[in-house]
Length: 100
Image (cartoon, rainbow, N blue to C red; front, side):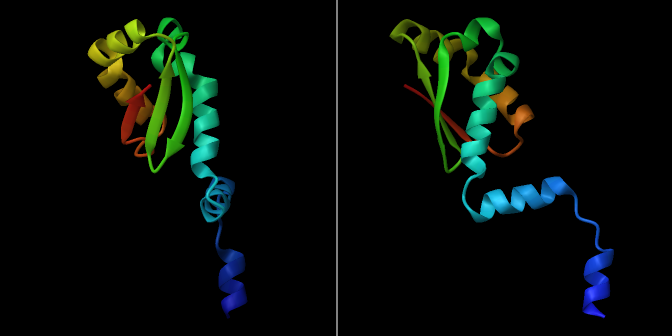
């Protein structure tokens, strides 16, 4: 009876991949790569030229900023917007953003 129940359960490929990534603790690394690739679409072309996602650990994203002036501008004017757009891109996966 157990075998029949297992065969009848439909599992989406995404669920399987997510489970494997979680099991081997690779999900944050994969998400970091996705954020790097999609950064211009997430934050906009002009801002993305000044940012580089460098780390994602325990839902904390570290963004390297190319100058102290841009770091201040991003912190003062864009950080809340970046956080919101990242949450739209990957809901619940990034809780804190550090600028360095």
